[in-house]
Length: 276
Image (cartoon, rainbow, N blue to C red):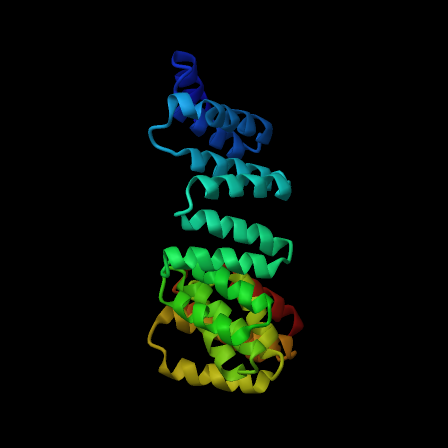
């Protein structure tokens, strides 16, 4: 991309779209200084030349992302402010600025931006997740549940289930927390499973019973494999290696030799065998 956009710039120095794309390519490559330089050219010349595929607000927004990538949140915030003052109808601008405030633990200010984004598009998955997480960090769990529940019905189904689980746990709804976390493991995500095991560790015997109830109802082979692996991990943590190995074998049968879960199951089998 850098090669072709550089050629485009050489052929026509007024081609701001080429500068824009090259700047983004530099950012991806980690050359943040050159990325800032190209985006700055776009911003300075925009008034005279304009852009075909992007806007001035986009240039501010992406320059902010580059500053953020360079661990300069203060300069990033300035750019996000400029983006919003130029175009206040974009959910992603409010979301990114809200995340900037949230990372500073200024959750009240972050919440205002996430609410503005929500007002623009109440179905935006990123906005729903940001709203829920912000309220969760503020320990306003019942309000957070509203947005995590809506998130379940978006393209970020797995994230919605995961945060429903974490939030329900904070509310003391342990049964619901485990169920939602099980659902969040579609598709399987290792970091989710580790959090799930933390929840199960509060009462592992009860957790095993609940998962086995779900196994009796489940029709999907991959999900059966996932639940057997979850049981294997719980039994392994309890020191019951034979039970863990039994569920690993069942998980492998349902996986049919493929799937993202397979390497983790195989690794657990290896861990179990020497201890038997």
